[in-house]
Length: 294
Image (cartoon, rainbow, N blue to C red; front, top):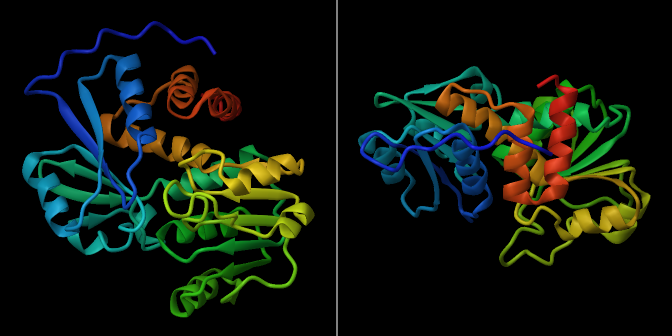
């Protein structure tokens, strides 16, 4: 996937804009993607990932230090809301923030997860007639559930051991709720939990092998690693498999636009996706961006 040679990027100095991410389990993929785009476009920005044990202090630091933008990941997407000055419609609709933009000390909360999932569902041709199971009930689960509902998926079940959160999420979007997995699966299986994520849950399979064997499509929002045990099992069974790396690239591009005011072209996005997540994801992003007319 050829790209134009990178534009000369200014050396880091006092005018360099800093962007960052806050996550319970920070990785390198987001930093690699954003910094690659800065390099390709010659922008005087730097991106760094962080975690924190003091969310309020971290958000105060964003404001006080003039950090331009911050990506918010699990488990902070809901807890961050009262710490911000304004909440944009994209985040207010689902009570979940995954992006902070700092405009001269005024912090606004946005959500680019919803748009990314909605666009990905369409780009990968998922049939909205398929019933689905969705594991999870947190901020990202809200974004995915809303995107599925707005994409025409009428029949689904939220699987969440947190009864209060699971029931509320299911009721909000007109789906069923269960605390545990049913005896049989569904045509579309969606994982919005840390199962399969790098760390303590790395070897966990989000759904039983018989569920995967009987499904038509598997969708995992875990991005680190891109190919979780769930995704690998679905690919081995010949199913449509959508990885969290695809979601994170699409939502990161929208964050990039919010931070810089610049929308990269399809070639730059594919290049950065390949640099951050590997050539398979880069090729998928190239096809998706071309399908969107970018």
